[in-house]
Image 1 (spheres, one colour):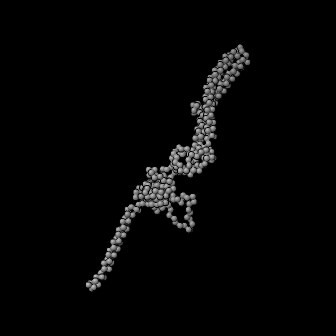
Image 2 (tube, rainbow, N blue to C red; image 1 turned 45 degrees about the horizontal axis):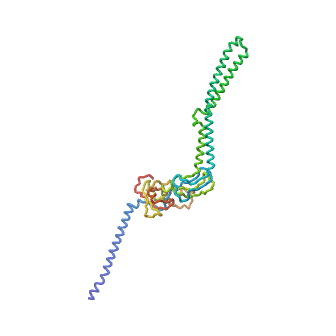
Image 3 (cartoon, rainbow, N blue to C red; image 1 turned 90 degrees about the vertical axis):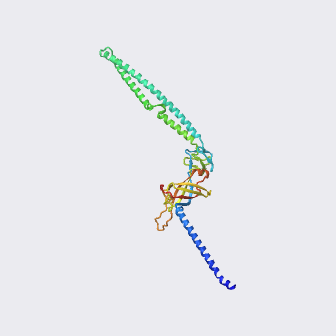
Length: 354
């Protein structure tokens, strides 16, 4: 019994060693299979995606400024308030503008009366010309009748001279009447009352005064949220004074800054998946590439980097890429300007423009 036990004991380590080798072989094969699968997945799928977390939500910021000078009487909206297009944001004192409007209306009425009087005078002057023509014809007829009598010494020279002077005077009066008529016609230009330059100028002043009065009520140009309010009641403002901003809740986009090594296969129209820190992975926005900027951020900076020194160090540049968001998703999951996002662009389809 002891001899058999001694002969069987050395075989147990050999069996354990064989199992270990087979296990290591299986693990090695498993790792190889996983590596090959990862490589195939990368080659077929992952290599067509470009990602960056250097991406932020952007949108329009409508700067609200007055178009006229004045004193602020009331501010109707504050930061974070939701306003609709046409809602009053700020009211200015309308006293001066209202007086200017009334003055312009009075000036228009006066211009209409004066122009109308000129048109009436035109008819009177035209009638006066006809009267002067008749007077000239009568004087000429009297003179022609007296000439034979004067030649026959039947009338005196003085009477003949009076007849000649009457013709000259009648001709002069006719010339004056014609000149007055022409001068009057030059002022009214033979056009309708509403087309007269003086009336049109006065009407323009009325419209300008009305606009100035309307502009004392500063309204929102579009629907959105109030931000960066800087105006206070009682402030004296001018057309260059920024009052506040209105940020639309829709029509937002993402500015993604990709490395220059990532944009070789990027084209306009490629689909994009976006996740945000505010909602996490639970909400995935869909979008598309709508444009690649024409320069990197450093190229458009106020003081571009100068690389003409001997201590130059190459830095990988980033190019802003504009990504359009799905507006329906924005309505369901609203975003705010400046929020961080993670962007993944599918570059499989490369038929679009750069």
